[in-house]
Image 1 (cartoon, rainbow, N blue to C red):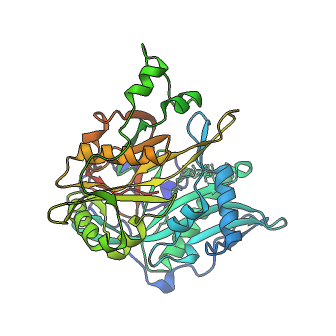
Image 2: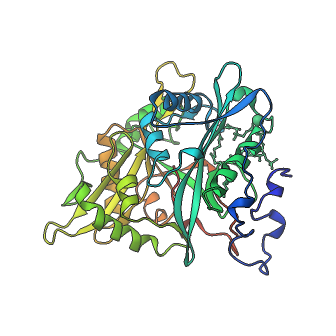
Amino acid sequence: THKFWETQPVGQFKDIGDTSLPEGPIEPATPLSEVKQEPYNLPSVYEWTTCDMNSDDMCSEVYNLLKNNYVEDDENMFRFNYSKEFLRWALRPPGYYQSWHIGVRAKTSKKLVAFISGIPARIRVRDEVVKMAEINFLCVHKKLRSKRLAPVMIKEVTRRVHLENIWQAAYTAGVILPTPITTCQYWHRSLNPKKLIDVGFSRLGPRMTMSRTIKLYKLPDTPVTPGFRKMEPRDVPAVTRLLRTYLSQFGVATDFDENDVEHWLLPREDVVDSYLVESPETHDVTDFCSFYTLPSTILGNPNYTTLKAAYSYYNVATQTSFLQLMNDALIVSKQKGFDVFNALDVMHNESFLKELKFGPGDGQLHYYLYNYRLKSALKPSELGLVLL
Ligand code: YNC
Ligand code: MG
């Protein structure tokens, strides 16, 4: 049972398969004057704080909370280590609200002990573009777990989203909650197999030696597609057109305009990388690929501290084969020193995963919408949305 989630406007398990329920908002928007004006109550030893991500000190506090307390794999061998620059990028897109960057402090020590964030986004569901909040980086300090702090934080971010007249949200989690719109799987492509095996991220396959494994995952030194280059500011209009056309085919997808593309896809060192194919003949931009940088701390290994991982973001192929485009993405990520390239089975990613020697990961990623019902769940390949 889900004592909290049962009270929320989300698809409930008991309603799965009930086709009489309409698609769309579960609860109507209410007048802003009816939104609760004061913050929810925290246990009396804690207080709310709004996190100014422009401040180096505040950004470091959020960074350190997440570095020590955020998501780990099932075996507690690795923990996400989002960089400060990444957090700044992730939390300050066009039109962001500082009031949606919500911290909790211990009153006496002033130590930051919990965090949750929202950012505004337009997400298309079928034919409708809906203003939503994307909720991410929910984290409660390890020593304060299982005290029902998370529901209060979720209610508080919901209140602050409502105050901006936004009534829907999208989020992902590794845990099953009522109820996923789709369930995706991570796939991993070894770039530095020796290190991945040494740190326990992967294992030597049956009848494989280390040297055969290294040879199996070897890649060329430079991309093979003529006209493959880094994305630049002048490419924003063409990349936006490519992406909008590609994303229009998915049941649920992000609705990017040029401002969004400028923010989310222009290369930022050690945060996000984007490449495209410019036709040597026509100079048209025909293909695009991108990935973001998210290292993990390796917990308790004497030889290594950090796993350098690239995560597939948005990719579109119209002239180059999708396989060759993504192989070029692997080549440049290897050159940049990543140990592994990860991708979800969303959009058309299935079509390259096996051939490019990705292996399925354990653990799933569930996608959710708040206050928006779908008639039925999607396949991962019907989803055009990647959250960070
Ligand atoms: C989770 N990940 O089921 P029930 S993902 C949502 N997302 O409620 P307590 C979660 N809900 O089942 P703890 C959740 N994990 O009784 C747990 N819950 O109804 C639910 N981990 O609360 C859970 N970060 O405070 C239960 O649990 C209730 O102390 C229990 O805290 C949970 O960012 C957590 O994995 C996750 O830091 C903070 O374990 C803690 O365990 C932790 O007793 C490591 O909570 C880091 C981690 C989660 C990453 C993420 C997306 C979050 C989405 C939140 C939902 C947003 C809804 C939309 C709001 C805007 C609406 C508008 C308009
Ligand atoms: Mg708690």
